[in-house]
Length: 532
Image: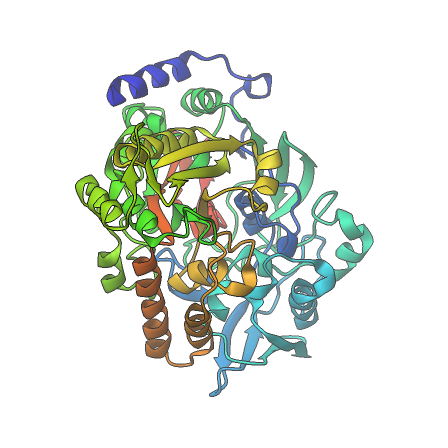
């Protein structure tokens, strides 16, 4: 059934009419990148959507950059840096000759302004914690930035690769105010803001003087004159466009898994894969709810869900099951914790529930002390969540747990996920390390969101603090490894799927390689060139 559905859908995609915006072949010296959805704005510290990162990595630069292995820090706007012995002062030595898109030279004052704006409470950045506990960020001279922390922060360089820390022009921010990243932008990236029509397309043009790209690329300068980031919500239309040469790039979430097998056989399309990619899907329990608070329910759910079958049926095998909380390739992954997450065993799930006093009722749903084993699950409405949550619902029903699923359109879904209404929720998230993943979702101070589990554990907070402030990598790894084991034992999550990074390009695209930082395929896109 799986192969038939995929083949049938692919055949439909190949014959679907293309939207008027794609009626012509992609223009010369213009890369057309099709995306599924837009961001609400493109202001680095205020734009947390992956869709925002897709543009911001092209429009701006960061002090340091990330290698293809997702763990090695490389130079960016800073060509080198020093760290004090106590781990609290970072001195960044900037490249010479860097300019903003308007031609203005970039200096250390611009860096200090951008970081200070990021951490300023008035900016209301939902990710200001990623900057660490900042004491001050100052310009010692035009090419030296001194970044002082109140306490060591072992994650700092990793977080400074992210788009939230992008360097922007103060004058443009002050001129546009709330409309910065909506009506315009001025950064030092390889491409410059030309126009944005929300929910339709963004047009970027080559930054003419840019020659300071990260060393992971062979070309420090952009090779393409213009990039159009076009929003096409329908998967079939995106597939038809990439096959016919009316578009050049479809990647990540915009590339449906059912199409991958067929695309490999299409001569007009090149398919690329990034094997090191950290963007996972999990199901979390709100542990202060009557049924979800029972450890036996959470353990039984982990045992009952056939993740491999979900990977095959819903993700067509393109994205594997997630047997652990953290991807084994990520920094500070703990192998012992990986073994502790229960594997599929529905018979064992029934035994766990029996031992905990959950007795099957007349309809097969278990009951304990008058409480039915019923869970209300929330999530965002999309094809993957529909299939995944239906399959999980059926698996849980087989062991006597009733899960009711309510998926919401993203326009209201995030608000619903901020309520206290549900018992279970599903979410996908990008991360750069084990610390990055756990430090977002599990601190007690982050309740009720993004700690939607309402996990309130002093030992978790202690281990996170120890890992974050460690100046010795071994101390950090030990603290974060211990935390992974603690969370695995508590079954706070059901880790579900490790999404994969695939990118399809048209035949005329050369030098393409998907990156994957924060779910972004092109990153800087500097080696990409067009043959016609």
